[in-house]
Image 1 (tube, rainbow, N blue to C red):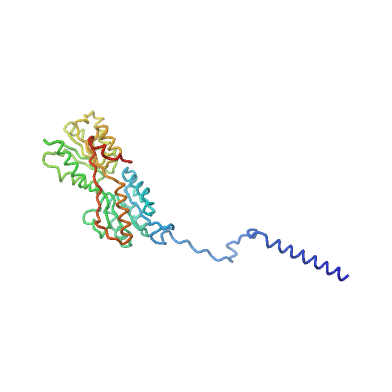
Image 2: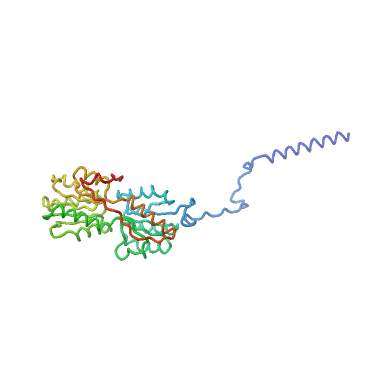
Length: 350
């Protein structure tokens, strides 16, 4: 009898242990999730704001912003593509700040870069003067400031306000336009000027370089700037010039190739003989090259945004490494594109 009782106890113990073993093997997720009301779990640590880890992202890349007036401007859209293309070679993470022709967007963008501890900002802004306070704040916060394609206004173009400027000498572009025009018309000519976006550094410098170089043999019939770097604006201005001066116009100096397209369309609509009109555009984009090839644009003064981007990235890298720049202004070499020289240059990608 005792043996039978002992046997039954042994079987019961084994069954109990087996049941316990099965329960231990059950997956943890079968337990109900703990709710906020239960309050037994430790609160999660709050996420750190973006950029608080310093001047690099989680992959160790330096953060560089490209601030531009607008990607509607073909040259700036291409410049942004070069930033994206070349950034991996330098270990940079690049971000776009598109002002869309509104300087307040630039001020806001610079503020974000300061808060997120960016390494550098390269900028070609709509109105550089409007950004001066924000630029100074960024400089004081240790952000590297580079001007790209255009310079700060006179009086601010110093290392106190920016670390470097990589771009084209727009004054020189205006001088080249004037020199080429005077060589083409040794006995003098009448010219109209269609300027770029009014108040933009490139517009001011391309105008000044031209007007400070022409002599008395060149008569400027009229000069007017556009509200934006928009071909439609240039066309409307040219249409007015044609109404006022017609066949007295011997030459057209437009501050950018795409704007000159609008001028050419206006002259075609007025049945003007383009073979007898000396047309000048600046930038060196594919449209400018195409117009030189077809004979509607006499002179295209080009610039390399690829080289400009390389120069800017080189400057940022040197400053990051504690090196002193040999110069804080780096000019890219201008291209003098005519029907006789066009084959000497690589066809532009933009």
